Length: 154
Length: 106
Image (cartoon, rainbow over all chains, first blue to last red; front, side, top):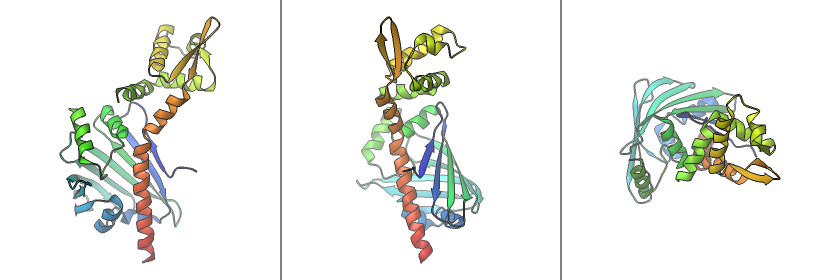
């Protein structure tokens, strides 16, 4: 079976591309990124703030199984409805720093759509690290694992 | 952890990736591999050494010649490398799809 979600990584580059085709009309796919209560449902995170507009910002918070809270935030640089979102993303209290995300939404048919997510990290090493630990935005990860990784990076 | 990173580094070089592709189709001697590149022979030898050290290639003695062939197990391990990351996004996007299908039918 073909995998719906594809990760494209070129060796030696500090970026990666995630693509996914959805069995959803473009407008619904885009809405999933805009409506705070919907974002909460599929990202598994609490949305503290989400200003979907140019120069807006957002703040998410997840609680891991141990009850520790992890914050995520970013700034929106471009917001073109049903087309494109360019934003930064940062995990608070981690040494990972900020990453740049470009999300392109594309209509395939009336009932299907495609998301192209381009993420740029600060360095090749950091990108590989992110891939290696299977770690990314909003994931509910155990706090001790985060500590492990953070201590290795220092 | 370190070993895995070395594999990643080994695959980061375009010449080494070309070597892997070449050897993937058939086992070859160092000479036959080098003949496919403009690079100096010692440079190719160095690449082969790195690929062998991180177990992406295996050496096999055949008479007087040493043949290089792909270590399929290791290659699979590398492919699996990003699998947890991919799987995480897959799960998340599946959820998105489910949530929005419900939303649509409301």
